[in-house]
Length: 399
Length: 163
Image 1 (tube, chains in turn brown, yellow):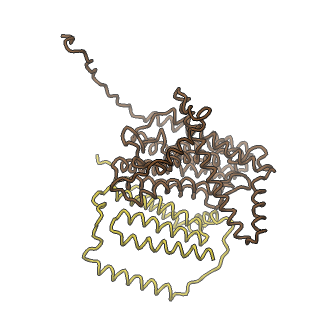
Image 2 (image 1 turned 180 degrees about the vertical axis):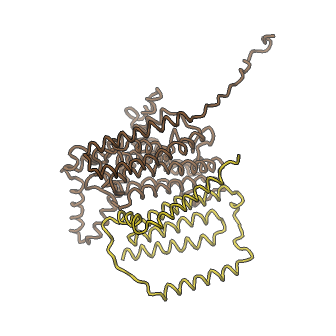
Image 3 (image 1 turned 120 degrees about the vertical axis):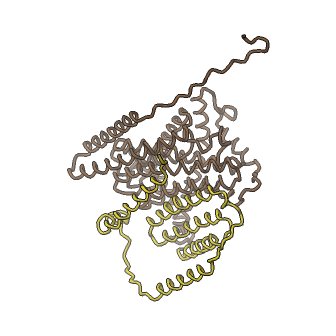
């Protein structure tokens, strides 16, 4: 009972072997089943997430959120899905048909493919490759490509502008994201995700809080939702790169965006919150799966809370935050952690001293960086408007 | 059997995409076909049990170079016209040069007796790679990093506003 997933796996495998299927084919079928299962779970979660997010947004903005379809509006997402499936696909005149249709699929792929390497529990691991961290970073490139494709092939100036912004933003925020991901790799001495999860004693968020913070901010920018939603700033760019998409093609971009935020939660859980680890997770692997999804949900809600509380940042603020603050601080953090890790391993210190020293170093860097940034902050230019004349009905103007 | 099939498929995709890169009249389509060719090469690396090189291929060639190319093309409106001329006056000369280079390379590949050592893949290839880079191959590694730093400084110098 404790090891439910492997129990079912062995059961199906024995049935397949009983039918006279060869060993390798049976393993292949099981792998296909496993990946389909992961994808389906992702989609089911997204359906729930859309409702949760809208309800949460309602609460934070002092309104009800969806409340018509079913109790508390829980069937709202299903109604939306049915509606979006029945909509017409419109391809604008002058669009590049091939690229126009590939782009939403690629956007979906770039998010779902990341789930292939996640460790869900101690013995439920996807492709446990040696270069797991690099793989996650590399797959992200397809997401940027999808936005570029969509923006260019739509034959729409707004979409093209949005795609150009995406390159400026997504590529520059990739740098602090990758550098901060190197810290858990360094602490675990491996790029394998399963090793990174198992090496966290205690969770990395206590050993490397600064890296967790930088990763959180930069991956929120990678998702491209508020406060970093310059890609789809409604007042400037209509809807951004997916302006011309309709029906399920738009739906795929939308779902990919939601799933990306959820994936960021999962990455955060794996790298900084100990993944599937938790009480009794080694003895009952099924508990590990729950811990993993629970932590992911928690991070997802925290991210939603942050983005619902902050306004959209301006494009120059966005670039300054990245190049003048996040990138230098992430490099300094990486160097400091590397040196401290090496020195303390040489002296063979107790684990708790190691953790406390690491924590203090991180906090010290953060405080120092914030102080320097505050000192160097340019005085904000306030534009004073001359008071406008107030409209008065004709004949009553004051002389 | 299956690896051979995958190898054949990825070779066909790579070569077909590469052919499309040079024959396509729309330069942006060429850029996207180039990305497809990179994906094909990456899948061949995966088949060769070299996941690190495969992932770096995707990360560097698709994530950085290809996106840079696409972005540069999108910024230059004139290149987006649908019927660019793909030849200039020197096409005959360059075709001769390319064919000659191909023949020489092919001759080298077939005539040299390549020393093949059958080594088992180490338990943790990434840590072996890291240790080799910082011990045996430390000089080329450091020179490469200095080169990249010089490129970075140069890029900033060019991009900086003149005072």
